[in-house]
Image (tube, rainbow, N blue to C red; front, top):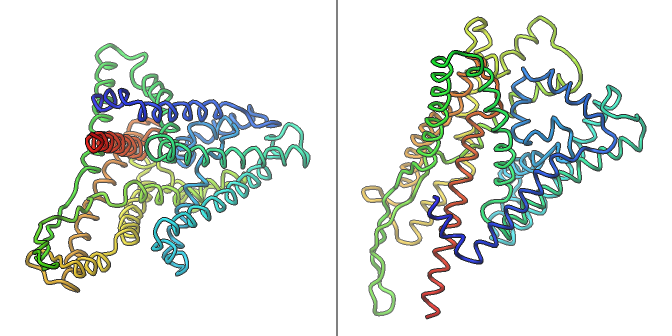
Length: 439
């Protein structure tokens, strides 16, 4: 990886793209410190501190890079864009018109991206209005009036829209997927604070032996988790494909062998985000409305949904939520794979091009074979994803290591880094080809 970066800096075009990406990241972190005008930041910081035991807000804080708890102009960050993208992907299945756009090539995808932008602004506007109304009279606004409320709504909506624009500019003029890089830098910005929390909790004030042992265990857990994520993202099941020879004019063409690469972790981090978002919604609604679940069944249910209560052996009833979480991850892994990979379409394309899987007849037998293989590898990927996500949650529950930097964050960081490095390598390869052809 370091050799790739070193070689990339030697190429002016790629060096400029890296520099542009770096400048955009500086802008993002600078904007994350700018307060929303007319907001009592001390009130919101105190309120957020009171919610620290709530796993839903740790999840949200990690995604916003701490902008939410500081109530900066980027408080909503790109979460409205992520939500709108998920909504559009789901609607693509339900609405034939959108499905047709998706199949229309680049023009259709541009239209879908335009609709996604409008949905993003709409969601950001809705969320900012809800926050302003929900917290306005409680102390969020220094002066409770229409003008101050409008200022907060405009600032939060504009901040989210601006970050979406920055992400798209990084994609066009920088390196990597801009939205993913924005999300990654937000998560990375929380790492020093989380490392400090772990140090103060398990190392500081302990004897040399206990402190060193705790530091080694923490480092080992992080390294093992990263290795598991790399293995999970890189694992591929290759389905061999043979193309029959055929006559074109006077030439006999075809006959080559290739393969269909099926990623084990086909859905990426999407199942974890879906599952975590669903389980955090009830907790966030109760917290935002200032309500409480009392001491009865409602409190128990909210406790089950809170990740910080899982693996707590003193309150084993709360770990029931863990079962629901695992089921949701597996369900969404199958669901998302089903909308991104169509075995029927793949089998039809292979048949039209004269391709077949050795030992499998073209047509429906090929579709059934792909469905069977896909079912196996999706389950393996979902199981691996669950293990990676649960490792930090286990240590949170057993040892009280409450940090926002968890398995989901590691999956996103490692995935974005690997994907960005692949893109840099491909751009270097294209440049070498151009140089060869020009000579």
